[in-house]
Image (cartoon, rainbow, N blue to C red; front, side, top):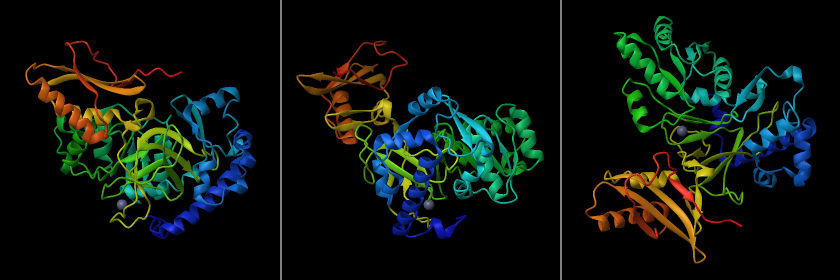
Amino acid sequence: MLDPKIEAMPRAEREKYQGRLLHTIVRHAYEKAPGWKKRLDQAGVRPADMRTVKDIESLPIIRKDDIVRLQRESPPFGGLLAAPPEKIERVAVAPGPIYLPLVTADWKTSTKAYYGLGFRKGYKAINTFSYMYMASWGGDTCMRRIGVAIIPTGVGNTELQVQIMRELQVEGFAGTPSFLLNIIRKAEDLGFDFRKDFRLKVAMLSAEKFTPALKQALKSYGLTCQDLYGTAEGHVAFECEHTRGYHMLDENIWEVVDPKTGRALGPGEQGELVATALSFKGFPLLRFGTGDLAYYMDDPCPCGRTSYRIGPLLGRVEDTTKVRGAWVFPRQVEEVMARFPQVSRFQAVVTRQQNRDFLTVKVEAADTANRDNLSKAVADGIQDLCRLKVDKVEFVGAGTIPADRKTLVDERPWE
Ligand SMILES: [Zn+2]
């Protein structure tokens, strides 16, 4: 731990600590950023109302689309900038595009994530992220704070990356897991033994789905493969050496909410991740709706950090839907269907019949025998995982379901 006093503090104490920080950041945003003042006034929230962590629920959730709209209406930063212009050191660009003015002092808290991943003073690290994005600047800032020397190589030039990593005896890597694997494979093609000829110890891997296959491949080279969860807007959570979910940073409030109602959910309940970085003074983001679906865990972690942890990401809010009161995630449907190799394509379709939600699973199967068994196994699998009864398993002809289909479609009419 970089800061054991804070990272291992008793939970009740952390709640008080976060309550104080919440009050400070809301007051700061209200007083310094006209866009935030307007938003909070409209919601009827006063900074003085923010006393405890629980009070955060009275703040409206801000989404990517809202920021894009605000920045278009009131360029360049949508009235959300809470620092004098000369304090802005960089402007990162997030998809949208959203322009994110950065004040590097605000990144002190995220440094704990990089330390947690294993970056140490005196290391050299290549940063292969594009320097347009937050992942790059965030990583750069945090690694520098620890005392890591950065080699800003950007993406591409795999052969040159191999040469730099070997000749400089680089200990750290920041980039996507697949790009790291490309570099390792290139090194092997060039005749090197990665374990012997290279010094790579730690990697900050992010910005793409870290599949079990990728993880396994990287582990076989002796890398620890702790994952970092980050939004393009700069919120991060990290896996410690025990890789039991992403630790929340002490200066971030992560909520899991019902995407439709905004109601806060408890541990283990699946919903949308909403992030508030209490340390982002330059460009505060209060209750940022990430659109990512997950749940949180409150059981203790053997590493000694007392923060809650975010579980695996389950998908995106826009891809999910509620059927008869139960959430269905595309990933769950995919997980069930992966058990049936005879199924080439599938799609879950929600319709409305006689004022009731109706769930059909369409299936293209090579083998026409045993349809009844397959049908039952599909329905049972979904019932187990989603706690939801499948109304119909429909076998359709080959090529009926398009190759680029969505796993889950909602065809209910909404008036
Ligand atoms: Zn831990």
